[in-house]
Length: 245
Image 1 (cartoon, one colour):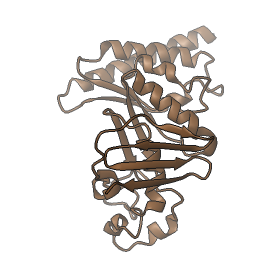
Image 2: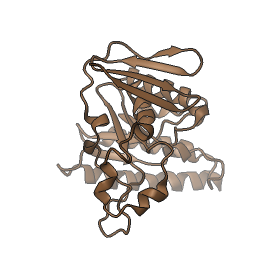
Image 3: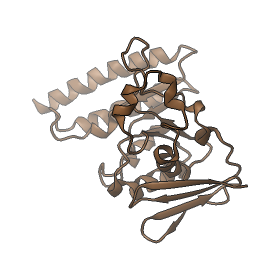
Image 4: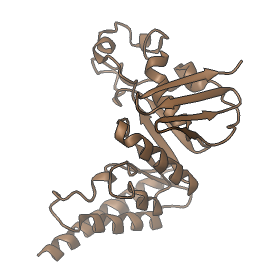
């Protein structure tokens, strides 16, 4: 009975994969994003070999994707399995990362992003304003006020998550800064999704990196670019971005 359930799950997933492949033949579609890969081996799922069926389907999807289309997934996560799900990069072009902003996960997350980039994979780090008072955000009368220097653009909110990203940034690395993802204009509070081009800290010119990040002691990481110095403390979860004169 269990083997039958696995077989049915794989058959259903194949149909879903083929439907997604058909969509990617549209010129305006660049590829496919697979969410929830980090949950594919959870023990509470109804089939014991759910992870095996998922991997088989994902590889089939990879093989059948049209040439030039990308496959990205929510895969890498420190604390997920012994390898942080690096095995999923076998069929993915890169990984989206969330749920990383916890002290015990920071060092491992840096290692995962570096390992992915070492394989030529894309890294897409999503980040929230650090220690933000969400109540104040909700009370803003004008949603455009969220871009002001007095608010989420302040160093105290943006320097830690952005600095953490800059420690490993490479040509195929991407950073997304927001509180939520719902951009529907009909929402009562569409203030949680930000236009990242509105923040000087994100759009400023870095210049060439002058090397990889350096670990100084147990918790401090630094990296230097032609026009910027990055300093991150993973114990205090603080960051400093110093523009060179």
